[in-house]
Length: 284
Length: 340
Image (cartoon, rainbow over all chains, first blue to last red; front, side, top):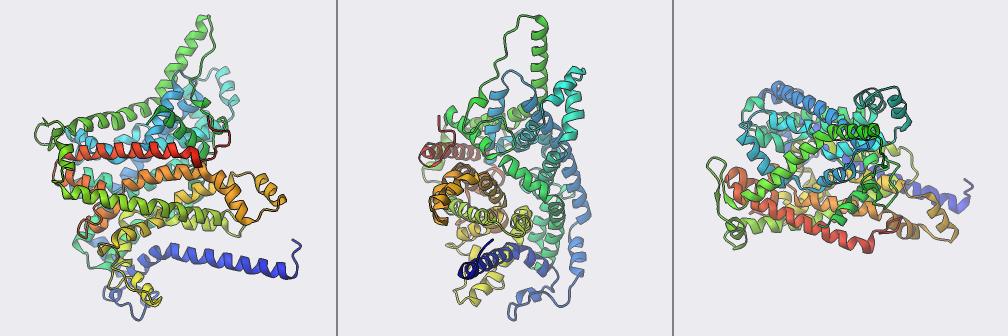
């Protein structure tokens, strides 16, 4: 760029201001996470002292983490949560890919209108259906089991996921299935041997969203689980507060343990995740 | 809501997505059912039959799911809303009693919850839209490390609600929370945050801004879709940055803005986590959000009839509000292909 004299200085000043602003915003953005980790390493009395202000505890108390995992059956809750996450991912990926395949690559009668109606349920407020869903599950005597938390995943796995995969499948050239059809392949083979292998990145996105959604879900487990042995991490954490509301250091240590897997998964998959939102313009 | 609005919504979702390349912008032709070419040969019709079977078959999970988890529950809750029902006993038909009991003033908590939710929606929707749009505008500028900052700003959105709420309880604590320390440092008066009747909703709105990562990414994707030629044309005509924002960016982003507005309203009216995890609706019902109140009716007082009535009122309100926003959209949303 041919910037000279005054222009050049103005440009540099502008850039410095811009980057300072964005760095300030980044700091603000990270405050809650920083505060959580900071407090998780403190003595419980230290948390109440704000003057002098402590940026980071001089002596990090790892014992907090040990104590936090003792207050609730952390391992059991983790295994429960992982179980729910895995089953949900399997159901969601399988059925949303199937439906997306139908809505993108099979020309059947009524496809347009059916897809439009299903897509419109994005706008349907979830809170409107929860009560009847609860009553349905309780009539089926399935309250306090995992069924209400996993079975819905096998029925399409959510409109946003279907839509995202559909958008992705549309970008795969049509000639691929046409030549496969000539070779005598049916829809099941085209789906399993052509579409799925070509859509790995989109399927990863669906898996990631399902992981995050399921790991973070409190609404479902609160509603459907009663026995403490069946609780998930989020629900366990919620109970934790009721019992140890003043032990902020332990509460923060437990929270950090629940958040950490999400952050790791996010760091690994953030590229796909953001691509997924960009691709559909939807948030899952 | 009319079917036309439904189509418009779907168009909007299409326009926001950049994946499928077969849908022309602003067109509804994509929804016309495929008219198969006429053929007399029986093999053709047999093949078409097989195709239809395969199509319905592959889509069956979503169709059944839509019926089981949307349509049937909606119909059931419409029925329960006219009944006295506590899950354990049988339901007794009582007509409009549940609706009347909400409106005749015998339930002050209902009006408190309406007030809290309206207040939250009015504050949160613009706050989230403006903030995430500003972040997206910033990230859309040429800069070093854009991907890094984009991921960083999205990060708070993935923190599980329970853990996030706990951290914010600590941050906002009036006695030893970080926020009051910062206010002190800046010479501003301390706040009671979520423990004050007047400050609780603004505090929850403030906290919500940290969770707008997805909206930011959607805005950013919209911004990146604006063809550069428009800006170049404006530059030739001597337009400055201000003109670019108002004459190109804002009209071109208006469909995305519209979509985020609709989804923002729907989300805000259903706010729940903050009152469930953090405030229990307090202090003095100031944060008794509608859905939390509905939840209490259903699962604390076991009054499924009344809760269903509340659910239906919310559904109708959302429908009407969305339809209203759709109606006004003609005035401010710019569609590239021209509106039909």
